[in-house]
Length: 229
View (cartoon, one colour):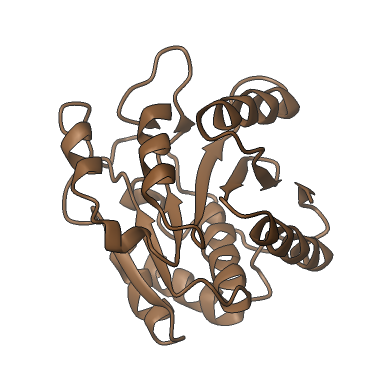
């Protein structure tokens, strides 16, 4: 992710969904946010700020926080930490103080402590998603996801942010799902809007069922979304 994205409509979707899951799945005791933070640039990404009708728009406190941060020029991922902590959600924002680069990526993932992967909703947030044919620092690699998945506890959930690629949405979903199944042996659950898709991987079928039920509830609130339940 980039700090210039903080507070846009994708962030509203992401943080509201994280809150929804953690507040309703008893085994989750922490939110571990693997930011994969990259430097801001001159592109206009992050300017979609019209929350009306978007996933998360019913969460007025979150909307107010994001609007305030954008308005006051405080577009920084660390701004979300007090929001979750105030709701009793133990939150670890990993990598908010350093930029993710292709040269540092091996050490970056090696330095994620096992404690952060226990009883956790682990959100991996690359700029673009899982690496395609020519991955760079804006992508996460299958080996990196595999390492996190293997190290996480049986009651944790791995959640991957994925931008849709320049192809039909279902093609992106099918390709990424196949890659995730190859490295974990599990078929991911997913939910998406017109721009991004979130994939979920667990080690427990009962946890899969909990996620599916909760995504079904979420879809009921935001019918423009779609999901594999």
